[in-house]
Image (cartoon, rainbow, N blue to C red; front, side):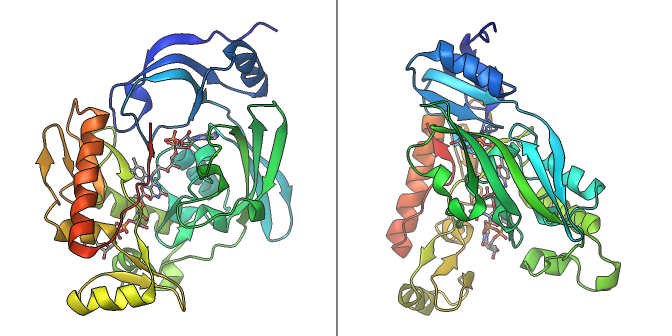
Length: 339
Ligand code: FAD
Ligand code: EPU
C-alpha cells in the first residue's frame, strides 16, 4: 500500500471554530484504519494532535508535530431488539448530522444534543451535554487505536469514567488513543427530557401529548440560536469554562451574600454554579478587548471578532478567571483544549 501523503505547513484557521491562525508542521486527513496505519508508518516519533471539528480547542501557537484530522465516516445499525437499536458511527461523522439521522430513523435519546458542533469521535471525550442530557446516557462503546502500539482497544461505556464534561479520554496520556468509532444504544420509544429551565419555558402551555422528539430538538435548536453564536459568523468554542462544582458549605456561604445565585444541586452532592452568571456579575458580559471579547448574550462564551490571536483569547480568559476568583473565591476550569 502507498503511504498517505502527509501535508506540510497547513494553516489551521479553517480547522478550528475559534478561527484563530496557527500552522501545523505536518497534517494528515485519515478516512479509515488503513490510512491511519500508513500515516503512523510515515510519521516517525513526531508529537501528534488528533482533530475532529476543532470546536473545543484553542490554538495559542503553531503545532510543530503532526495533526491527524479524523475523517472516518459511516453509520450502521449493528444490533437491534424490540426496544433498542445499537448504532455504530464512524468518528469523523458530523455530530449534528448524526443526531438528524437518528430522528429520521425514529431512534431516540440524542434529541436534546441537537446542534452541538464537532465530530462524533469527540462526543465521549468530554461527555458532551446539553439541556438535561449527556452523551453518556446513550453511549455503549468507544473503539480506539493506541497510536503508540497500533493495537485496537474497545472501551465499554462503564470503563470511560464519564462525568460532567469529562472522561478518561480527557485525561493524560491524551492523543494516544485515536477514537475511530462510537456505538450508541438508542431507544425505539422517545422519552422526552424537558426539565431544563429554557426548555420547560419554551414548551409551556403545550399539551405534552403534542410534543415529539423532532419538535423537541427543533425547540432546542431555536434556544441555542437565540443565545449561542454561530461559529460560521463569529469564532468561538462554546462555553470557555466549565460550570464550577462547590461543596454544600461553600455554597451556603456564597448564597448568603448572593441570594439570586443560580445553582443546581444534587442530593448530598456538590452544588453546580453557573459560570456565566459569575462572569456577568464581574462585569465582563459584552466586553470587548482588542479583537476578542465576551459574547453579549452569553457570558460563558469568548468570541473572536476577527483576527484575534489565540494568546489574546487566553489572556482574556485568564483575566476573567482572576476576577471571578477575587470576587467569589471560585476557580474556573477551562473547558476547551488549549494548545
Ligand atoms: P475537537 O475540537 O476537534 O477536539 C476536542 C478534543 O478532542 C481535542 O483534545 C482533540 O485532540 C480530541 N479529539 C477529537 N477527536 C478525537 C478522536 N477521534 N480521537 C481522540 N481524540 C480526539 N459542548 C457540549 O458538551 N455541549 C454543548 O452544548 C456545546 N455547545 C457548543 C456550542 C458551540 C457554538 C461550540 C463552538 C461548541 C460547543 N460545544 C459544546 C463544544 C464542542 O462542540 C464539543 O466539545 C465537541 O464534542 C467537540 O468536537 P470536535 O470534533 O470539534 O472536537
Ligand atoms: N447565566 C447568566 N448570565 C450569562 C449566562 C448564563 O446569568 O451570561 C445564567 C442563566 O441565567 C442561567 C444559568 O446561568 O440561570 C445557566 O445558563 P445556560 O442555561 O445558558 O447554560 P450554561 O450553564 O451557561 C451549559 C453548558 C452548555 C449547554 C447549556 C445547556 C457548560 C460549561 N455549558 O451552559 O454547553 O449548551 O448549559 O445545557 O456546562 C459547552 O459546553 O460548550 C456548552 C455550550
